[in-house]
Length: 383
Image 1 (spheres, rainbow, N blue to C red):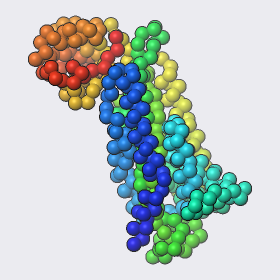
Image 2: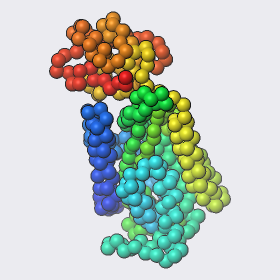
Image 3: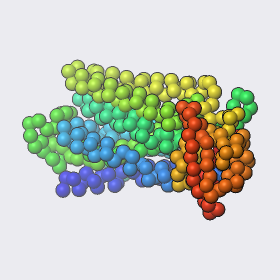
Image 4: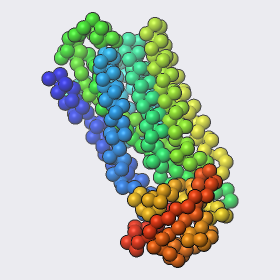
């Protein structure tokens, strides 16, 4: 029965439905932009919607067992503030500020401000008045924030490159060049322990951090965080694993400081502060690095450079990748898109490509091109 109540709370939280809508809109605007630039969408518009929960379900399951099993109790006031901050994030679509450490720290600030100034918001079914500042509940908040920042890094590593959508710009030499915008939103339904009346403490060791309460409830809460990045100097497949690793290490650091705060409680604030400053530093470092230097994807004298590959197309089946250069088609050297497709017609039944990969090594690819194949070879290129 307790679990039923916990799940029921999940489905009455507006964050869930706003997140579903935000993911749909994220895909819609991506497709709209791609059609405007390339006259074709690269992946389906509902891709972001489908990946909203799918990408992080394993982390949600692990953290639910871990947080509820240990008994990391957090106040309802902080969760309400977190919901408000999460909704503001999705309403503004400013996913550069979507890291969970920002949301967690902002929720702490909002909850404290409301309590300190005796402000309140009436939501009909309940009234939000903030939460009295206390290190007891800041410690579990810091631990949860660190764990979710770790998951955030892993999801950036796993999904950010795949989500990167190309944009055409002019390089310093006035030539067309491609940059990639990666924008992603994730939802992790995680089971938490909160103060309430449904559950009494079952054992002396549970919960570990009760924040001064003796009875508790469970709540399945929709944790939201987002990511937005731009790559132009480095191909997405190489950039985002590095960013993801840096973010995951930051998450581990937050957890470690949070654990040490069990010995000296003020370190809970330090854990959140280190997380916010560290995440800002990571964002600034990679943003400045990517905006300096030459574009990775720009016209090449030795052939035609690939901007992107349509999923399921002949090019995809041949294993062609962003940033590779097609030098020859059916034995004919090419220099632009027109020559590429003219050379394909020489022997479309057995199209043979000579490709220069990311390591500047030549590899050969071959595939049959049929007349009904979507968008011919299925390549977006720069000339």
